[in-house]
Length: 134
Length: 297
Image (cartoon, rainbow over all chains, first blue to last red):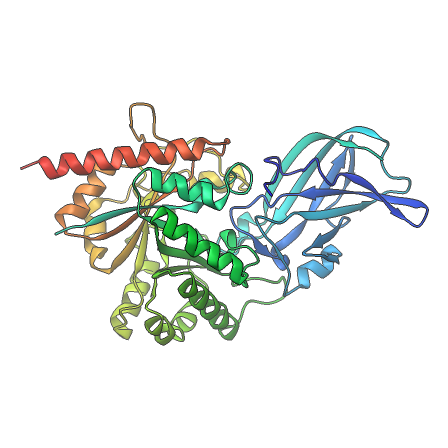
């Protein structure tokens, strides 16, 4: 299955329920780099929705069917974000987002050890309008 | 006699792969321009790396057969700083490289480029590099693979890093360690191509700046060179490349009787489908220059 060209995918943008409560929202992201990386090289994603910001330390990551806090991901040894696999990032927000179109921006931070430490991490930015259906 | 062969690295199609191009589409593009070699990045283009399914490996060989392509170079990484609190050990690095050697061999490659983490602004490789490579030389020989670190801007040929690699070749006497030259080191004019993820400062510092390595430096190391990544940024409608001096590069390779692959690495702007057209232009340019040089008495 091909992925959308934009890093922020339309598919997968939704509110997250826990029992009867809406506890946040999630976004599916395409790997911005030219290669996939081991999870420990991911330094998080800052998320902005309609002007409200969450830092790189906040979103939870689901990769290859496993869910991590960013702290856990930095310590991980056996999970990857591949070019042909989406990462799902979950942002806690009581009540979630309203149904409709939202202006979403992500700043994805990745380490590349072959680039001098002074220029690390690399930040990949993407912004687009995407729609929550429920 | 110099025998130049032409290939394409899937790196060229970054951004297009998995969005507007499947692996088969990319291979069809490579075959359509008469290229015979395909270069891949293990961590980029092998689904479920480092453990692809046998079904995928069967598909890979089926597509190589269908499009009459041979696997050339396999890009791998030795990420020497995987975690915040400690560096990779030589043991861990050696295991990592061995894993990629075996996978590259399983996919039919004959060359492997480990990209090693750096410890300084002038891109000195992490000191584990020597032990990691040395411990894998026998395995590389057994699998008939040449390990070749890349000489890449902003590191020129006349540099301690390259001197150390050559000293290593001399000391070990191994036929399984050589150099890979990235033609970005010959860049003569600035490029405005944007490199995703890098800050303006990082791009100015090394990824846009013309290094302009002279051809005489290439001649000096050519006996150690096993593979060339034909890096470029933009070729215009008149088949003019404003940054990379292809005529001089090809002339140097021909005159010094170098044989091997020139594997396209398009690194220009990442607009959908642009990579396909740019690689086609580069091959048209290289073929016409090679014919012209051959016709010169």
